Length: 145
Image: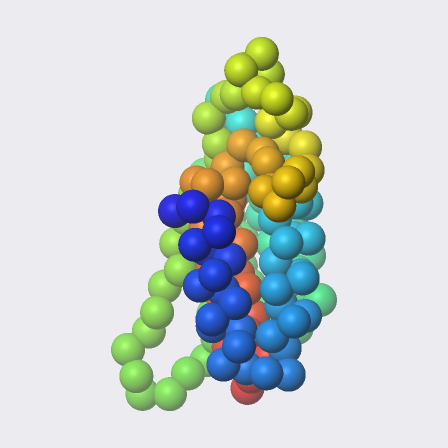
């Protein structure tokens, strides 16, 4: 999903919660920059680094979570918001990215730099961008009570 679409969707969702709209947009951009800078290139993956990233945010938000490793460094994390009687919603994504040959990039693939209004980095248009859109939505729901 293109980053602009993800961020537009995020802005629409955040605007439904006025007290957090600007904050969550700004946070999402900063989170995505930080997330892109975390090396989760597979192989070897090192998804535990991404788990630590999410765990830090969930802890700051007071959201309980669980983690597990299927193999050393291959981490998973899940968190849950208690809801009513409606069906549950799952936000699912992978946290590893494929290798990037720097000679084919005009910026460091793990830079997270913003140039000409675009955020650059491996995973921006794939699951890292989607993951941050999901995280921002999840936190908007959490913050709205």
